[in-house]
Image (tube, rainbow, N blue to C red):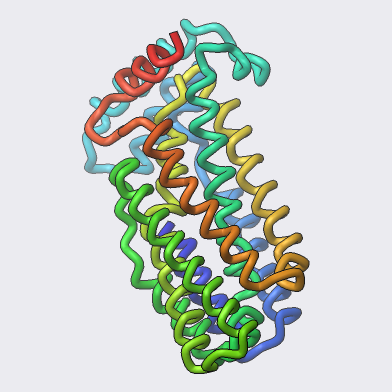
Length: 300
């Protein structure tokens, strides 16, 4: 999340001095570097152990941890994990529909849906237009967002942080909606600018501190190891598909009602708080086995 936030901050800063088309072309460069870098990434030690290459697994693990690091304990844990996984039946995507996985699936997919529909993709994509529409300097607004993104604190400590940051995101989007509502009634322009800047910054800080990253941590903990791959793929697909929907439709929603769309985002962020309180289990200080056992017990 720190690297993502730094990248977003850099995007906002560069976007103040070049056009969006040039910014999009610049965005190709990191992608090309990533493609080239993939050829230099070693195979995962866990993957090598799963396909029976135990010697190569230990060699890769030693390379990743350093020549002077004792990897014996970690190698033993990987071996134990592999043996447990091989003893389980091979999972399929349809296995996710089984009743015993219902609660985990609801938490994983539901949390991603609500977080993405909360408006982050729309706000980050149309930040300049939002500030300009509210009578606030786009350069000042985006630079402030960049500062918030870089100085954020990634405190993934369970569902309490998700609830608090979702509540803060709700407040931020409500203030933004209030700003546009006052604008519709031709109220003071200075107050509108202050509200929109405050609202967007509160939302950006809240999303960076927990609402954006914590769902990914929770997702990695709630699914049993035999379906973790399939479930993770499904949840990730849902996350980015919804992000695309929000990004694509938000421009039309802003034209419909700038105040209305932010009040909609505020409502959804409020629903995140209720969803977490009612459905999402606390994962801090608990083993994966304890978390998964408690979720299965809830549906029996």
